[in-house]
Length: 214
Image 1: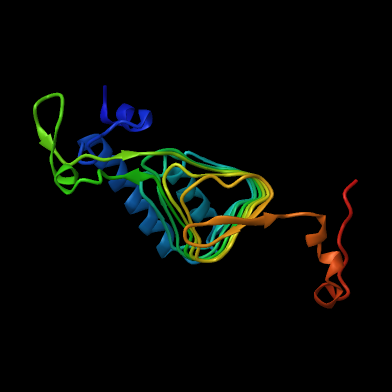
Image 2: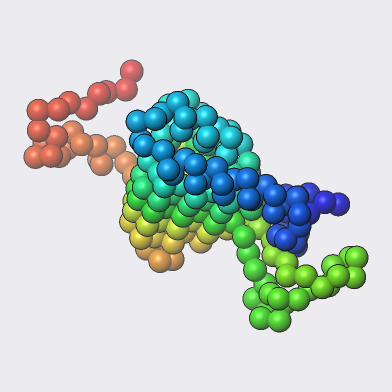
């Protein structure tokens, strides 16, 4: 079994494996290329980001700078927006649904390291070699989610559709659909309902108008 296969199965794997290192180096260099470009060089940016991520839906935009670890393990839906400083450490699979919006400095992490200090530095592999190993758990984010600034989503977390995650939250467990959640650790504050509509906030809505569903 290759280290990539172990990674995808959630088993301990060796991050220093030459093939994994080559993939990370390629992606890290592409990150740098993307981050050096002016924001209005949209064609060049689009070309680079499509080399980085596994899938990217149409109408998506990432302000930059961006920091993907592997990139190829990340799948992003349509009309995704990320403000400054998106970081995705996608050792395991990361999926982001359609119409998601991220504030500045959102971080998604999938790797997990052993709790015992000695095991973080030395575990014997099947070939008898002593290596520094870790494992990873996927992160899945639904459609129509809004993340405030400095949200961190930790390994194994699943966030449902239509969720709002408050600024500075650290998500360590699943968040159900239609939830406003916040805090460290992040917890559900309440369900998002029709009463949250801007039509009930005329002092903010001003002369704008909420479009009713067909």
